[in-house]
Length: 509
Ligand SMILES: Cc1cc2nc3c(=O)[nH]c(=O)nc-3n(C[C@H](O)[C@H](O)[C@H](O)COP(=O)(O)OP(=O)(O)OC[C@H]3O[C@@H](n4cnc5c(N)ncnc54)[C@H](O)[C@@H]3O)c2cc1C
Image (cartoon, rainbow, N blue to C red; front, side, top):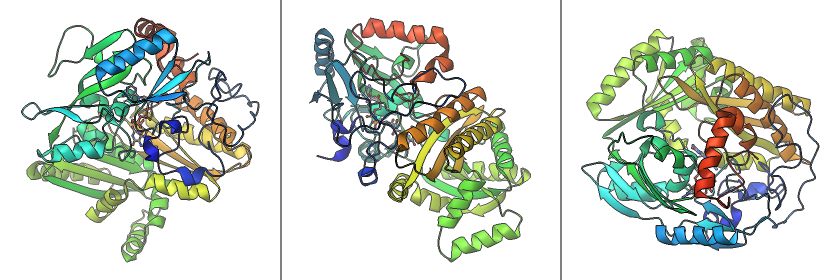
């Protein structure tokens, strides 16, 4: 069986293809809880607040499979899924939908406080195109379909979805909707939730048909309840997505700024002038330095020398991608170039942009190599308004540095902004440190908890695109307030009265 499709992997949050890295530590990014236990050991789920040292949980015995699902079920239609959910509800069996298994926040942890039996619902049998409405630019698909397969089908009609997260090879369309994913082109085409115009969700108490393209004013939009619901309300069994013509022209280019603050200010100017490109990636000095060091060949050496000579020795590199009709692409690039030059940027040209494009799915595989070498390699992400971003950036880095240094492992942190909006942008931080081989999970949870407290206090969101899962649950009330949590609970109680739908995620205990 393709390991990415193996639902027994659902509680390990490693990316498909990451298995070799896990030999020494089966759960470097998160230890799955055993049935009936709190997900990450005592203390870890306590409400966020002032930092306290956590009691150190004992690592699980190697090879412990006590949290594996009791069965894997593969429904083929909405009706079969609805019947399955109704039966599980009656019998008190927990149901965890399994898309591509790429959740990095414990979305598939399957933890149930009551330790009920559980089934993993593998959606791979529902992975075909159901309808294509070319004049309306709409495609209707099954939730188990993966991005590459859909792009191949759409490509025959000269269309594309254009949703390209780094997990694109393995993640599914249903998973994107359930987690409100963002892709590399989201600045241009929109986040995945913006691409969903309608969906069908089977719940234990019936089937919901949500959304009405092109638009409707019939009350509050219930579609928003299903997007980001992470399997807690039911299972998405069909999606209707907005597609667009395959771009005729694609141009990727690199720019350099003297500092992160200057780069952020320039992006803010682009957004203010409605000149944001389709792809934006502004790396801070540490990430730029690492990228330049990893680039080989005479071109890379010449680039490093030229940046030093022009006073950009500690540069922050920006990659922009422009897609669409040739005339539009060149007009937008020209207008943006003038704003960027006014903001102090140096144009590095297309080679830098093309090189980013070639390597854009390689990062996670490099992570495996680094982990094999004994490093802790983890990531976290958030988003904030343009005015709050600098504070959030400083706060997260400070919290991570202090926490890991206190644990005796000084980290290297690399950050980038990869999704820009008129009002702000996302922030993604990669952390590398010597791994505490005895308690690697505790090492990261300690740091992550400090960073999450810090980013929320500074005005960031709990998550920009990785979703809540099991890992972010303790902070959910802080994000949406106690009344917000009650509203979600009330909806869940109506649709899932026995609480069988993925009970271990999203909603706090
Ligand atoms: C290497 C790597 C890179 C990543 N890069 C990105 C990125 O660039 N952008 C980004 O947004 N995310 C990224 N992620 C996170 C992850 O890929 C996304 O959260 C993705 O949307 C999950 O899709 P999936 O099909 O794998 O869902 P799964 O991991 O299988 O499930 C995720 C959650 O959704 C629920 N679920 C899945 N399918 C359904 C359904 N049909 N109905 C109801 N609930 C369902 C599951 O129960 C679970 O709670 C990355 C992950 C990895 C490992």
